[in-house]
Image (cartoon, rainbow, N blue to C red):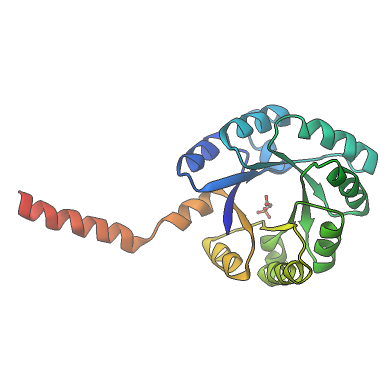
Length: 215
Ligand code: G3P
């Protein structure tokens, strides 16, 4: 499973990229609006200069024609821009057109197997089931990820599953076990994934043992 960073914060992206373990970034309008400059173009171009993998930029338009127009503009910002489009009727129509133009689409706000199936049929490069938001309303978000992965494998769809709306490290473990191609994680969760108290205790013990013999 690959890891994308789910943030529009440039400092977090720089730091995570320096670890050499992230292969993409996902943003959404809420994440971009939290940053000092909410100029979507500047934010995406900056991220694309730091990360060479897929960088998702979301369309804000709601009708098909405007989505297509906006997607074409945003896709021109950098070669590694992926366009995020919600799974709606308008979004599916736009995705069908854009995927034929070889624009990579990440169909977002996916909450059901049917939506994921339709996203794949429309030619989306990625689909993003929102795990945490399903958990929030008493559904099993990771079960959805597993079902989508199984169905995509069964029908040999090329669409990649991005486990999104990740809230804690256990989500990443279960996403990996479910066969998700990618988990997109907030920076705080990435930091939690790295840390283990026994690693810290182990380092401290190694160093104190070494100090005892080396004076
Ligand atoms: O990847 C989707 C993510 O940005 C949404 O996360 O925590 O707002 O449900 P959240």
